[in-house]
Length: 498
Image (cartoon, rainbow, N blue to C red; front, top):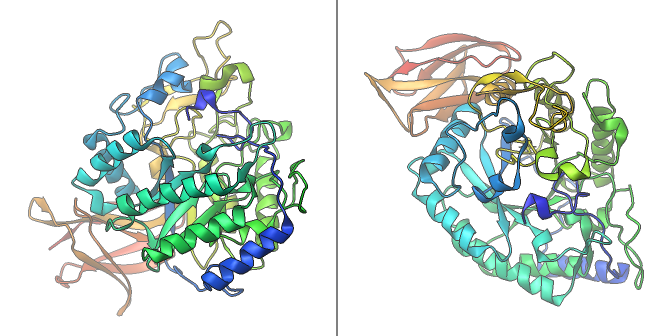
């Protein structure tokens, strides 16, 4: 679905409210069926620690270009116009994909969450054909971000009402996803389980529990034990109701009977255009405190039975695609004059790190390249800041906020937050891919990593907190380097010889 066609009430890309007769008895029956058919489906009260020593950073990635550039986006209306690095592109261009992967590998993004629409098979197939042909595909992980709204959303009530037809369609889509993606060596797995993020699960109604149970059992029969992450966290969600009731109005309270069908829960985007107190500079609005309170509420209600994945944005401005709806913007500066990417830096500290689940350490960023809503961290060609656009008033699109051609600023900010140090391994003038790099504290080996296809390596801050370390390749102990890791700054350029 194109951004211009989306109703505007669902947490940025937002479709909300839908009607559905959902019976609590059927929900419980579905849960019981699910537990019987697949005992591990309902996460145990005490979930295992999966990844204690590294952040697992993902970014939502869109494959709808160049079509969606034509829908409109903020940067094309600025004066002077700001351009994406390399210009507007075709999502299936292998050179573009390879460039994106290289940036992710270098700056600390571990996986891309790639959107998948039901009924858009030609575009999706073309993209994955190109993705698999890129020379550096092994340098990153990817997973599917399944757009459940494409199954059919009741735009009046804002819910996706599951019945036999929708369930069958979703399972048919997952059969394609499994065939196309799950066996690829770069597909993201958690303890061997392929990860899929489901959009808009917070709107599910009807026979959704049975649908998830059937999906899991069908995939398990093919040998795939799904790790499902549900988009459950938002200001208002569809309630789980008694038989014969319509799941409306939406409620502000979490719905554990639904989100415990998943292995983890997250939000796609906590932006809400109906909350005036959250607009403008986050330093002066309620946005951060409101998000923190909502995250706390969901974590408390989960009682440890699902993993929690915090999500952050660099800013939000959909006026380039939905100007007539007059949504307010959240600028990319924390406060006036605080500088480009200052909001992202603060959100890392105040919502991502604060609420990251230490059992999983996964963080999601919205987004890599959602330019229609200006949540992208993809690099722009460098240019100075501007508050002016080409509207008659000169600020209809910007609302007077500053936007710059930020170059690599967002990737550098990300790197400084999640990486302790990085560098390359070289042999003479050439890079060495696949080289093992060790980090020692004194004589004790405390971390190990490998270089990517360009000879780059990196260590997470969870592996190397602020302190002094010795870094060397596994096969050349005499070429060691002593470094001091500092808070807030990734040590770069630690180049090793092999």
